[in-house]
Amino acid sequence: MKDQTKVIAALLIGAAAGAALGLLLAPEKGEKTRDDIADYINDLVEAAKDKAQAAGTGIKEYSSSAYDKARSRFSGVAERVSDYKDAAVETAREKANDLKDKAQSKFEEAKSKAKSEASDLNHSVQNS
Image (cartoon, rainbow, N blue to C red; front, side, top):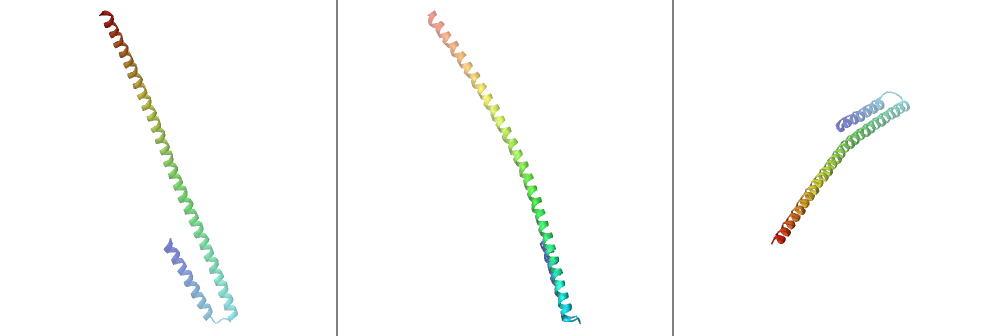
């Protein structure tokens, strides 16, 4: 796009220079020639303004599109990260509950074994 803009600018400048020389060398009166040159230059200035506005609009549209794409992609990434976070929290919660249940079971087992050993020891002492 940059090269295309340079080519268009070079063509406009070349056309303006050629037209100005043609008008200066034309066999018309000086005042008429100056008016023609002024009109032509005004037309070129207007054309340049139009091209600049079109380029500005194109750049604005491109940047808006790029922003929307980036925002869309980031939004998708943020959603996936949130999903992974939720899954990780749920997995951690499940593991913690499993560990708590195992610890409770081992505690009950140890408590039962301690009672049994105490009872056996008590019977041994009473029977001796």
